Image (tube, rainbow, N blue to C red):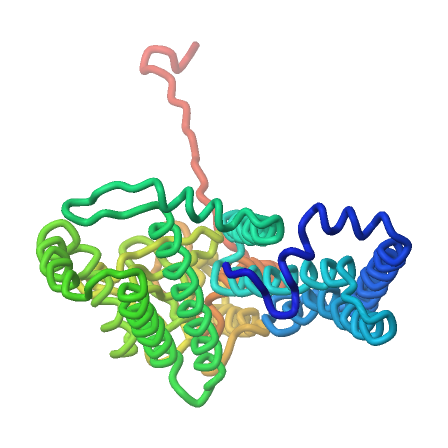
Length: 433
């Protein structure tokens, strides 16, 4: 880690140096100044939170506002501490050990908060994301404490002393941890940049949504691949091993991973030919729902009951899919009922068409039909077009049935119901009994 870090000297942050400084009046004064700067930085962060975030919690989901809020405390207190440190040096002509220790700690706190904000940005909101942030912060603080108390050289030497062999290559734990750190940093940077590119692409409303998703996925794949190619030479791995890995990967795809590869390629085909878009209403087998998400492996189909089905992309390509909103989002639906014989059918059809004119029904308007003469009544059906099938039909049909029930009762139109007539006959010898 080196013997110095910017203008902070590691020997000044040792436990003995800080204890010795705190036993003098200038050291106590420095500590009080540092505590006051921390309090002022905390007050500044609370003011920023109340003014810009308390009533706008959605800003926490935006990267720059979130990072800005997280950095107000360390950077605000850091600026005050460095100002007092420069004044101290100019007036007393010696370095303020305690103030610089405060400043170094706050500087590291700002770096940790920036790093955890990047991790939060690239990972989906979940328990894994929170635990990853905590792990990254813990490891960073351990590295800082190790540097501050001058144990980094000892730890590095101890890790280098633990060696092992993989084939003909000799490795040590120091090299392994260094490689993991570099790979993690490069991969995090690549994922972060890909997330920024994806958000920028999604704002291009003049470009078709499927094409935006394709470009975002290609950008992420290219950035991650570039990150791997950059990280491998840094940790000392020859890129020629990729030829062997590529051959093994090809064999694996040919046998065990062919379904995954098929779904991945099918996902790009679906996005490029624009046969299925987010928001489309699909019927696959006995399941009907709206597409809410298209990933590289599956399509998320959300039904009217709130359940979500994950349909593999290769299933969407190989089987028949009924897209009810391929060229038009309007969907035709109908309700059926019977009326009694002797009903004025022209009046009944007119009343049905009028009852079906609900706010969600669009042009062309509802039409009513006579469909059959049944054993106990005449069958009627009224059909209508709905432009928002994703909101379901149960509530709409309920409103229509209530309206039909009311207008039929007002006009004296009866709806038949099954009736059974039972005749009891006596046996032939019991008529006169």
